[in-house]
Image (cartoon, rainbow, N blue to C red):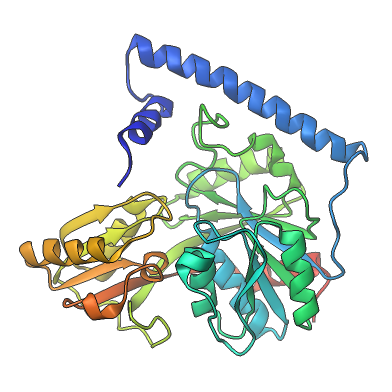
Length: 375
């Protein structure tokens, strides 16, 4: 679960956030550190502009999916969406992931073209294994150095393009297209970079993006859309902008994510125990209640990428029984880390959420044109 220190720091950087002289002083200190962080990053990137540092270029197009802020904006659902659509269009692709929470730093093959998932979440990290299990036929490789994993993907497979998951801040590898996701609710956090805010880099660096996707845009009204479009256009006039939303589509068994999902209304009105270890647990709960109609009998949330053990899974089972839950429901990213199914004496499901992009055909045509892989 989130630490007390983390919760305190989040309350400090929030606007208006926690009041008090000590908090104001800490904000001032963090603001100074943010200024140093921005200056250091600008200097680092300037070396590339001056030709003092070069990114490695691979012989096929590389598409990066990333964001500006810390936390979930939908990178994994977008990676799934784009990979499926590219695959459906006949393009041979592989996904390169950093593998947060996995063992080691070396390049490893998580899944092959035959759809075999070769590593577990503790070995490779939760997101790569989720991608491997939900993208049959798309090789997924994990490794800290994605130049090496890109070369390994090319050595093993005949490919048309590579998709770099969470790659906007990966400076060592050249991309043909950067797709950047902005959460419509707080697209630029509180406007400050780390550690004063949640921006990984200043919003002026959005100018590197070729395509912007505004996620969770379902509740964004016409005026809100236009205001955000104006701000994005001022930062990166040449980028295309699309709107997208997260949509729950059903419940899949935690023991086998490959089976077809139960319909979204399968648990309507039922009391469930909600479990999550993601960046934005509130979004998961909102989707669970609003889109499937379940009743939340109890819930537990851990830090993003938290690795569950068997004892914790058993404690969740006990807590769920105490509150009379008919089932346990978690995210798919949590499901790939959940201990073996034999300890689950209550039905245990993952809520499947997929990305939907408005003007999907135009979006896909734009992506293919920008990487020069049009039909």
